[in-house]
Amino acid sequence: TNDTMCIALTKTICYVCTQRGYHPGPFMVAIAMSANIGSAATLIGNPQNAIIASLSGIRFITFLEYSSAAMTVCIVVNTSALTVWYAKDLYGSRNNLRSINGESSIESGRYRRGSRTDELQPLVSETMANRRWTNDCIHDEKDSGGNTVCFIGPFQSETTSRAFRMVLILSIILTLIAFLEDMNIGWTATAGGVCVMFFDALINHKSPDRIFSRVNWELLVFFSGLFIVIQGLQHTKIPRHCLAMVERFIHVDNIQGICTFTALIAVGCNIFNNVPLVLLVGLSTVSNESDHSEKPFMSSIGDTDLAWILLAWVSTVAGNLTLMGSVANLIVAEEGKQYHELSFAYYSKFGFPVTLITLYVGVGIICLLWYMV
Image (tube, rainbow, N blue to C red):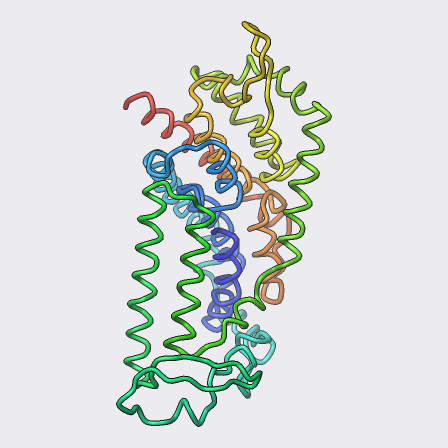
């Protein structure tokens, strides 16, 4: 997802920038904005798209056909604008930036010098890991907790790396095939992750504990609480009445309605954040004037699938308007703060105007493809 990529890349790219004498600021902006735009291409790219997948029932391949085209064009536009806007920072003097590197740039955990951290300790003992391979390639041994550990090898490092790489690629391919076959996104992603962890322990002799230790349990509790609050808010019928007032202005079957829909969702995402807004809009119902029954709000504003695709695109890309617009932006600012303080003004001076362009360019491409097909 976009948040995962921001966590994985920010410190590494900032570290490389400082070592090479480049200003990390433009690269931090690029990571945040590119992660958000890129994540809009699939139903698994970010949390709000995953929510839309579960609420809408839209096919994975249908979503991919329209959103991936918009993403490709907007990534090119965003990257081109970055190179022009930050030309001075990218190609200016590099000598004064080299002083940033050194011991202060070596982050705890990832770049620390010295002994190996606990999470890199092998699942089996050094004695067993260094033992020559015998006629049996599958071994078992007692770990420090008294549990029996089964594993393959040990083999040469090159052989182990090649085997795990092949397993990893195969797992990714099978997971993507399952997504394209419209299997349950949650269970498919879980199965793929468990499969990779299993073979990581079997082949690389690494304990899964080091992966579980990186799970952000506070974030999971936050989202669980968020779902409860949103459900409670739905029972007050406040979202229903608010959406009913603007329903006739945001139909996605005409240009004016599409532009108004895009503007309202973009503003709402930067006020309430994108995940809560998607939940509120996606779960809301309106009254059917013909028989006074309840129907989903998203089916009342035009073609349902197009409305869901536009909601996913706008709620994701609108997060690039300001630094506070998405969790991915905040992750980049937090992860890279020891290299560069990504201020609201520094980010928004570029993010706001360029996002307005990419937002409506993407919406235009999606609608053009939709009505052409």
